[in-house]
Image 1 (tube, rainbow, N blue to C red):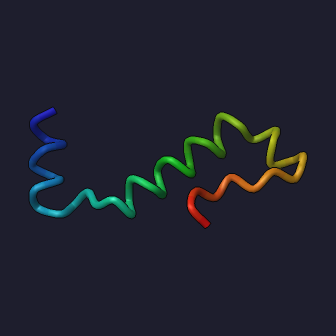
Image 2 (tube, one colour; image 1 turned 180 degrees about the horizontal axis):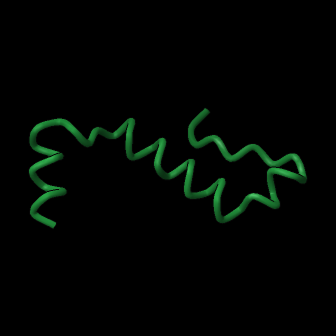
Image 3 (cartoon, rainbow, N blue to C red; image 1 turned 90 degrees about the vertical axis):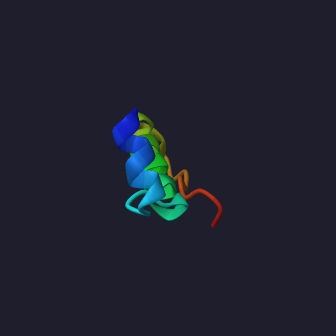
Length: 44
């Protein structure tokens, strides 16, 4: 937890990176929806 805080303070973790990670996790766990043509991009 401390490492995450330090990374956030020194801007190694940014909202953009968190968004990319969220999209990747959605793609991993919901891959079958991609095969059905669902767009998993957050925001747009």
